Length: 270
Ligand SMILES: NC(=O)C1=CN([C@@H]2O[C@H](COP(=O)(O)OP(=O)(O)OC[C@H]3O[C@@H](n4cnc5c(N)ncnc54)[C@H](OP(=O)(O)O)[C@@H]3O)[C@@H](O)[C@H]2O)C=CC1
Ligand SMILES: O=C(O)[C@@H]1CCC=N1
Image 1: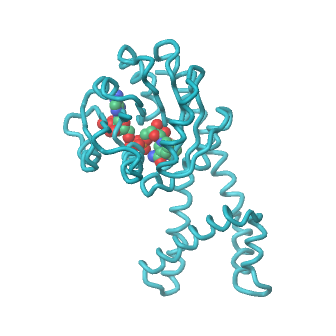
Image 2: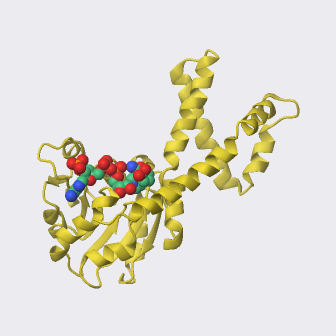
């Protein structure tokens, strides 16, 4: 399977690295495009061994699966520009926030097979949390193909398109919230005298281990939290402070505002 990327930025690079590291496809079967002649992004992605071009149409002609990784406001224009090169053998995927399968289908020839995906940057280390929803003209094997590709660089599940904006504010944006939490936890330890590299390592493992425990224990997160809070111990003091500072409400609000912004950006008309 030949895979083409339109746009060679952060997400295209994360997915490309994830795909290659998984062994699901070789770098020679991947090509990426980006518009600027002296583009740093193409240089970066070419270091993974993939082909590069300044021409989106070349990507489409040379690929079976085309993954559109541009900002949402240019997706419709980009799809329209290469529309005449799209055939029934192509599967067109977009990872752009807010851009619906309907918008994609409108810009492409009738009955084009389209899929909307929301991945996240931990694809770089094959730990992405991705969701996908299928367009109206996909064929039976497309869901399997998409699931296979997404699973190669992490976890994935099919989702109703009515929920994908929420997934964007949750798992698409989520790494940014968690990176900030890890950095802040480490800052706390540095403030108390721990060396920075050790603090970052311990904070990251604490987050990774906690996530694994939620997934594997099947226990409610609050019950797992209670297990850490010994009576009159240190954690319950910290939890009290976090509750007073609105920790939970801040995270709830973050997902809400990111979801609403996704809907707003998805309304872009080019
Ligand atoms: N960053 C993230 O964590 C996530 C992002 N996404 C989605 O992925 C998409 C890309 O985001 P991200 O990788 O962060 O953005 P970047 O800005 O890093 O990458 C966008 C890429 O698209 C290129 N581009 C712009 N115009 C065109 C065009 N006409 N034809 C071909 N390529 C073009 C840009 O080139 P140039 O720089 O020259 O303009 C750049 O290579 C967005 O739609 C975003 O919503 C989804 C999940 C997570
Ligand atoms: O913030 C953004 O626009 C992109 C979409 C999801 C994560 N990053």
